[in-house]
Figure: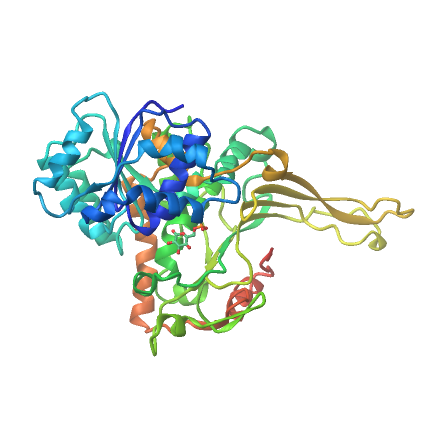
Length: 485
Ligand code: BG6
């Protein structure tokens, strides 16, 4: 159980807080991960919202928790931890004194300032915390993406925060790193002798990392249209997953060691510039289509705009130019309004060098390791075996399957819960260092520049499909195809 700490949740009434953070804290409490002396202080702009916070939070839990997770007894026990505070984060007025009084002045007690607010107000918020003397030696700040719009703006944001907090007290969240299977990926790689020898260009043919979503704009039209899939998903989640798959073994699981290995991967990514962008990336935007039984509108209709060239889909062929990975394509793909919601990493091995079987045995298919992050979490190895009960030697693929949700009865992962408790415990291994943010933008920026310079038009795909046909062609050029779930 984490020691009692204080969490000031700026943007307490916002979407992220109500949908993810408050439910994650409730879960943590219910599962015994939060000390009852912990205080959660959601900050709202208006006094009436702060006064009504308990009601708002209770409603959010009922709406956003999974079936059966909410119960009155746990709510009664959890709710005294919560207390809404009203203040305008950009004004250094006397309302901050209420927060200061609530926090008290015990320098040993951990303070987490969670900035679930737009980056434009990070600066004033941190400044006011500092002016009001609320930052002490055990204060940490937790920030969320979007961390900037490109390398320059990311650097400005990071420099602003750095005026008030040292790097070791800045916790940059990428919630994908809090997902259980992502951590399991590290366990798989670095606590089994089996994989290390089979984890390079000699044995692996190619790797696919795909995050498909069925949702569209979800009321975030303004934000999304300025952002697009490359900035929203690739710059952070997909590149982080790529780092964990491709990095060398860290000397230890310390934050410093893990981060320095991840940075090496980002720096070894082959730059995609000029015509290389056109050759290796497919950009798409959805139009109306059938998703399950529902007919959903296209991007422009959802946006209520006559035109926009923002991408809602992107597929990339990337390469890592280092000793281990040279020649292995890494295919990255993400999109909204796709056929299924799924996040999956597929490691496709090479074929055996020579088949010893007669043609009747069938093709000896290459092995495949499939790490699924969602909707359910599992790790699956596809192997070749003899077909059962067949009198002749016939081969068929079989699956070695570790399903986390089936294996562990009470398995309920929650990335935010894990990350908030890690921040409280000062464990930053699953958080992003400033240099990683910079390295990821350094790879992404030239792609965006090229699209802008060439006025690139996204290829249209029907909602409820796997993206534009060009995405299949991108893989087909190298004799590959997407493994759609
Ligand atoms: C967020 C993106 O970072 O991740 C969203 O801004 C996206 O656009 C979301 O929907 C996906 O997260 P998850 O955990 O639902 O796959």
